[in-house]
Image 1: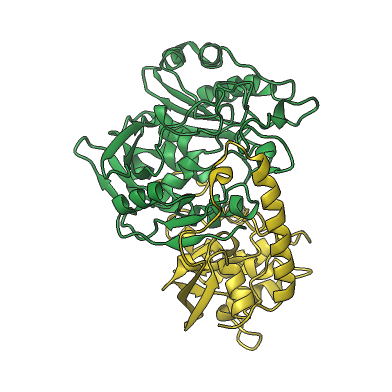
Image 2: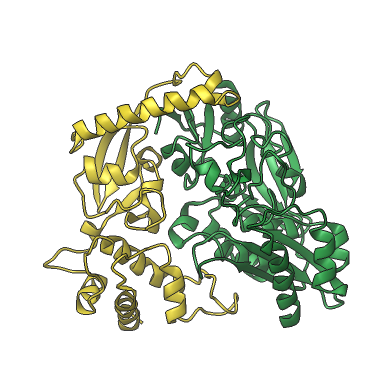
Length: 316
Length: 213
């Protein structure tokens, strides 16, 4: 790990201002992903701004009947909150499907959204990676590369990494909105749909956040009801990233919402695919995964996604 | 502050790491590292006070020091083990403010004023915690390296179930959670045992859960 200076700012706006002002600054919340990456020198901040203790660890009720989740609410606290379990069970299911008890006790809401991909070529600093070292190439797209875990849609010739979060997939299905404070002290709202960027030619740009901008809350709209399920398919029964995950909200009339994890650089959902839900899994996936560009190794994800949704619809 | 145990080794590791980092920034043309002067914005050490097993300990540490290294190398509490050092194996599990965490993925400087409990604070050979005694009784280990982390996790798993914190295998999210084999196994998935003592670890945890019910 490289040396860094450390500070605890007084409030969120001061944190954002400092992050924009100090060269090489990085926010630190739970640290479960950032410290791992710092040890590998994939992340090399010169200055660490510890945002713990800024009072952003509460879940409050909004006027529109939803919930406003502070960015420092841990994954454990969020998944266990009685209002979340009752009104947003999809979110509890998705969070509980990720990581381990120890990690969920430290991992935060904002940090979960900002975690980096687990693509093996991003993690191996001996390999080319356009996300880690822009312009160096994509190791995952070389001959004989291991791409089984990687993305099938929304990817580009520069990067086929996936976003690894389970929590974000549920939040996408629930139409969550990210609230931030900018270095100038202004607040801003970013729908989760627009929060994560597709790689295109610049896979190093991962979110809509401007330099120094700090996530303060994630807002959940009023509960949508229905039957809510999260089904994660992975290589182990526990503590593994998704090959494919499906978040499903299904209403009594057959309508609903579908979001996918493990297949794209961001939680993957579309209104057009949601509209096909009454017509079954095949109809949904032919729209949702239209334009997919899998590799030979991960083409199975397309079939797997359809069959996972089909199984969920049969059980629902 | 007590000096790190193996300072010379750490120094060599550090130098090797720095050389590798320099080589990497040379190719990292578009990255922030290539544009930076490489200078930090302030002191690279911080003084923190941790309450460890009920005792206040003041330490001045390099900001990079993990909670795990602070415990092992600065406080000589070597019961907490370093396995993978990346949050994957659970050997470093200890309790901070009543919650189990991977001490390898937390910086000591993040824990100023926090209450840390390590395996040394849970029990000693002459006064074992019920979970330690159950691990002995059920042969919940072979080499023993993962055991402090297993025991730290195991004690908290029972508390987490009783506190109603749901897991991946929990059925009804609004009902009381039963302490079942499936719940224990799922919640212990962050603690790896290379000797494969899982069946006996499960038996030990089940016994403690039943005895404390």
